Image (cartoon, rainbow, N blue to C red; front, side, top):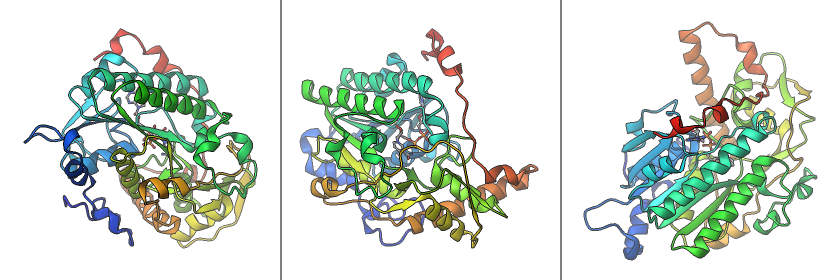
Length: 390
Ligand SMILES: NC(=O)c1ccc[n+]([C@@H]2O[C@H](COP(=O)([O-])OP(=O)(O)OC[C@H]3O[C@@H](n4cnc5c(N)ncnc54)[C@H](O)[C@@H]3O)[C@@H](O)[C@H]2O)c1
């Protein structure tokens, strides 16, 4: 593994010279007052480190010389713990005691843990998601404070924005101030907005530097691609691989979004953590695309051009894009990997996953041509008792 980070993820995306930056070393060189004692590594906790974005951030920080503690209530599906962290703790982060154990002695805490998924999950699982994510966000933050962490990163979302500003598919871009007055479309966005505020209040009241990123649809290899929690990019890649006669799209396909490739997300998250920016920042691309065009783009990665079949399904808002004025001003950088390049890599990876599955079990490819809505279950709430404390 290259420690200077050049194409560390092996994605082969071109035109991303920033991937060679060792941001952790540069940060420590510039912040002697925040550096650990001589001979010690910067100790970092990544909550949700078993998940998609968390595991990439953990891997990158480890390659940049940090001591990484990852915590999650499930292991990463695609990597062994030693590939992305020094310690992995299989803990329920809704419990304060568990959060305190995993953040013990950590200089920096990244909270990427959340009960989440795409539209087929968040709109049909509001109560459970509200409870679980509120508990995680509050307890990770409080644990970081009690353990004297210097910096705290919170992964928020574009879902915090006021739904009245997202009725037009030609959305010119949501600037950071547009989250208020608040009217997120669903509980997921509201819970994230409240958790942002709580983290910002901690930054005001305590010696804890808080950094908040509002992610706009992150995708890439090693993300969830089946089962109902997957988001649009992975679902479209899967359909592009599996569909033979038509391509299913929820709604009329005119709804728009922007999508950020994982390498940009990792770089931007660490860059923000190490910056002086104490206000929430959009972290997304401003390359907006409607779902019908996005479906065509996904099919193009597999050399297909099937007719699109628009079917009823959960939609979310009609138009969403990232306004990147603020991130350029604050970080002098913005995500730049094109959706075409990112989707090619992602669809190739999902194609390989499907091939591997086919090699080991009989496969019903037809089911991969549709998306499902996840019915809410209360098993995670029912399991919430003293037994959750590890
Ligand atoms: N992927 C996106 O497009 C996107 C967009 C906006 C915001 N975000 C935010 O970024 C963060 C990471 O998202 P992701 O895409 O990597 O999702 P993910 O589901 O892959 O990762 C989240 C991880 O949190 C873990 N987790 C959930 N509840 C837990 C608990 N009680 N205890 C311990 N671990 C728990 C999950 O097991 C999972 O591994 C989340 O906070 C999410 O809300 C993601």
